[in-house]
Image 1 (tube, rainbow, N blue to C red):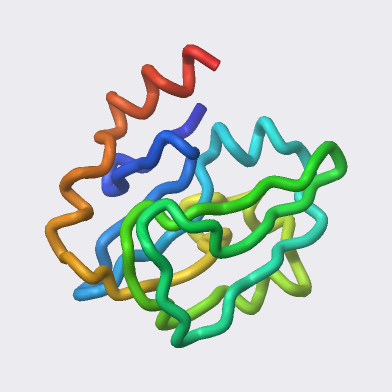
Image 2: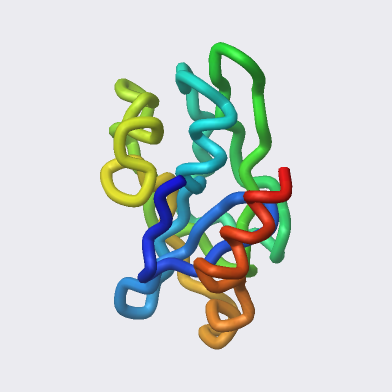
Length: 127
């Protein structure tokens, strides 16, 4: 399982990485590996706000469909439209080209309350 040390993680297998005043959000390498080949991603609209833990989209694979949750409350500022044509970017590069949304968090300090890579690794290993 690959982890990006710049990211913080949620128990639901999403990651968040700071970029200026925004957070880039995606699903972890562990999650994409568990799902298998991703064939479709349902993206939210830019400008929509979500509460912490709310489902903001769906990732469908050859094995299953899984909701994706926002790890912190915030407003969506961008979506990765490349995923509409190439959803497998999540499999190939979950922490890079496979990002899903960008959002401005309601509380900038909420990022620090997410799991560290080491904490997330322990949780993922128990599954």
